[in-house]
Length: 343
Image (cartoon, rainbow, N blue to C red):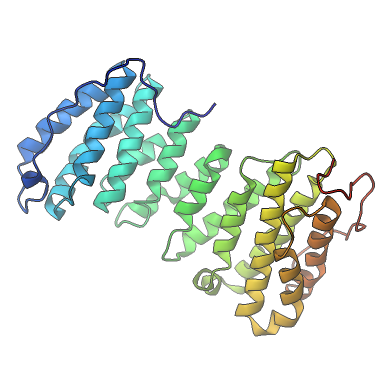
């Protein structure tokens, strides 16, 4: 089971570090000594072996910047001091300490809106524990566009998204955060390409996440940022993703998994239709097949899903001659059930 937050082993909550007064948090000239005393106390508690102590310290660190709006000066000093204390914990032997540290970093980064916590988040992106790595990817969303050091996270976020399949949705969210930017756009394509390889042998974790990444690539601003070659690559990724789904449409597919695939095919269809809207020259070719896939019913039988997928290949090939499409399968491949459950 993937643990996203530590579970306390004691019935009563531990007392947290002394809180900072609101006057300090909102001050245009906050006391650095007060901030450092608070952080030192909180970090001592965070490094405890007791999960309750760890959780209490984490919550106190986060509450400092969520209970009232911090002044820019406080946010600057607080995030800087927090980073210097949390970054070394990436090497802590206790995974719960690391988890609470990265959750605190992510939630504070969301509030302070600067790049001071980039070193902390960067260190935790390499963590071998899935929950820790996942929270590092989540935290990167709040700093990846923060100058000057935020953009340096792009390669590490991409690598973690590839390495930790359950982090794919968070990786797409970070890499595809607005405003559009070329390096992150390429990273979204690279992550989607790697995820597609997982469909060759089995259903990967969270298929709808790949629909989220694809949908971002065909948003107006992101699509217009792409060169013709990049647009062709996006079209190829659509075909490859659809083909990967088709490979997994077997009679043994559970209803829950089938519904996830239907949602993904609908997203692929809406993405094809989106290109038709943005590019008048491709409208006649892509609009109807895209809309047909987009309108798949939730309880569509496997044969209908396969047919909607197959119906996208040739129109995409016509619109983007440089792509490769699979040979169109029969509308009801051998062994594929026509019933609603697919079993």
